[in-house]
Length: 575
Ligand SMILES: [Zn+2]
Image 1 (tube, rainbow, N blue to C red):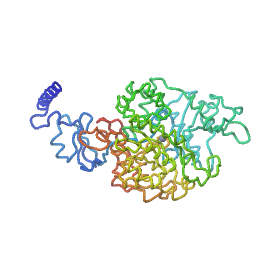
Image 2 (cartoon, protein in one colour):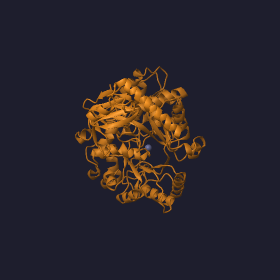
Image 3 (cartoon, rainbow, N blue to C red):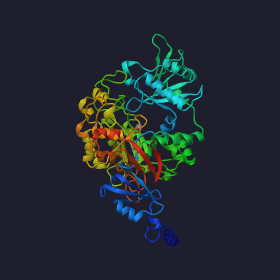
Image 4 (cartoon, helix red, strand yellow):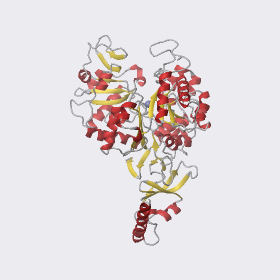
């Protein structure tokens, strides 16, 4: 201890001498000299004790000071300081992804994006073919090589005119092509791709699978789903270690472009963690990545990555805790409810309430084990019956003793009931919501669940009013990484059809910003080092084209990310 003290004292005086030599007696000391000072725009700190500022100083990847321009320049501007003019734009803390599937970014970074508008260009068959052709030309894909696309949504195709193999054969005669379905559970294949996987008129449809046939024939017509798609999925080319590094960088740039400096890998299998660890060792990480081992793979992961290494970053990769999935999705009618779906089951079942992924006793065991491991836990729960099951498992694990803090986040929590909120507040359980569904799936939820229950999805207002700090997520790549569109959905709750979904659950732009910055940092046990613009925190910053707190709420979705800064360095700049 003593020795360390002397060393830093020596460093201090040396640093002071250097500073004096460099800047003359009036400049700040080297320690107080900023690498960069940002001025000339709105600076939204998300720090209640100092909500706005004129200037922000950065040094060695950390925020050195926040304050008035005169104050900051006098105290921290030296000869080497770069003064960066925000030119009327807005600086906010970098966004933290609070739930998504980061590992998919590695594959989609090398695929054509064909999401439906407004997320992408895929409004009909011609626009999808055009987007893939643009990608083929841009990437200079050689003849014979597989072309992949992602985000195909047949629900929005006009007049029921769906994408088929003939469309793809006509446009891409020289390449196998797979256009991934937005659900991530299937895709449309052209003839060359069907040949690659040996899928033909003779192929029988496996139980639980879908092979759409050309009308009047037994010929596959392109779309393959569920169990029939598994061999395709499993047979996709595996990248080499060098490619893993390149794909990781490309995948993380998708986050950087969206202003995100922490990616969430929300259901990590052992082989996926191995990919992430190899890429990390290869120096690939541009942003931070937090992985949550999936309930099927805890033991396999513990064998290679012991518990005492969890919760700490190793070259920007951290294991955040464990993941449990307790039900499915409400739009897929696999979320589990206490009351039946108004439209029956996915296979036409009557009185269908959905089903839990695991029975209550197994859920209890999993939650108990997570509590014993003493790590943060995230759980996928959607239907109200699954929220009941989760609370029972939680109370069972706690055995009446709530004294030990336990960082628990429920993922989606879309159909929690009003009576669940006080329990969450009492137990300090953080709901992570999915307000994008108020835009994408409002009509499906209204038909399936009734207007009243559908209007209460992702009840952010009630959660905040109960004292909770909920977060909000995209579930990438189910929805695209677009934090401003997500913020817009939390503030406006406007459906694709143009009606407001649960007006009383709308939140303010500041609350929406907190849900993806400082409250998100709490989810990662990192509120002391990120999530707001305060001295000593890491300099993870985003420059936006406009101020989300002052623009017309409906215009929040039009705000663009202009620049993303990680640890004081620009990692993305819009051109
Ligand atoms: Zn998810």
